[in-house]
Image (cartoon, rainbow, N blue to C red; front, side, top):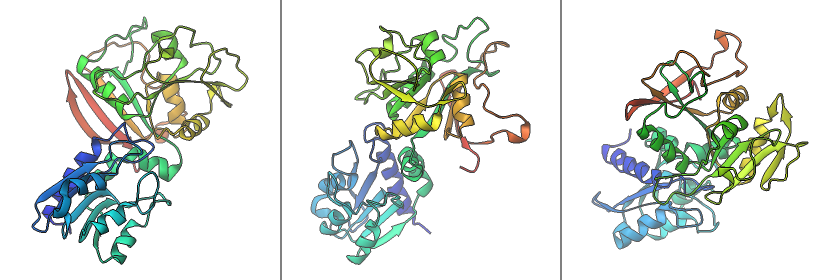
Length: 357
């Protein structure tokens, strides 16, 4: 059973790891805390950007000679390979660290084995401390490594009776300014933001991040099967962020930056879209599309997390948040585990994952 000192230090490491969300892809987010021989915190760091020093290196630099004989707390098993940076397992050993506590084993076959290397060097190694919390903060990268596709977070905003717009199509603004600002935080954490042709036609969305300091702009993606929704001059085609238009293999367009995908039903193949995005280094997707696109993703089993913003508003008519998802009876309903409920302005934000995921 983990000691309280280990739990406290690891929780701080998880907090540090979260600072890298949105800026480290295709690498994981990692946090590290180092304590000296007396248990006092002497160094900390997090992986700040892809290609830059890993969390352990930042923490070791801050700790200096005080790291010798101390303990390193890391949210992910220290890497064991040389890529754009050297192996962290070796760096910890050379710094004289006598004990390493990590939360989650590294599932990447190219980098795993750090724990064995440390043990072979005489370092005490403890694993699994706050594993659930470390998994949660790094879920996008872990999903991409384990399943070979991006992690998909479906976000929607609705009234308390589940409507995303009024009967006449108006929807600005159902939720509060605070909720809309929180969505920009989600965008900043994602590698790609995806909408469908209906949203592109109705809203001419911009999809870039606003109001988040030093945000790395995500790839803006429109699923435009027939290549008719995105017109020259659309806001999404400006230079504020990169853009990709997904169209059918047989569709005709003069627009640049398109990817051609096979059809599936009345739209495009969701697995093919995710494969194409993964090949471009996308490890996390924020699905902001309307009910039709959301239904296609749910039907394809491609939604990992749901974030719903519910406003204290009633409409009684208008489109629902989710269209046909291939669910015909209550026994086929997708049951969710709620992981968080928070007040955001005048709204409630509910975060949930598929039950048993």
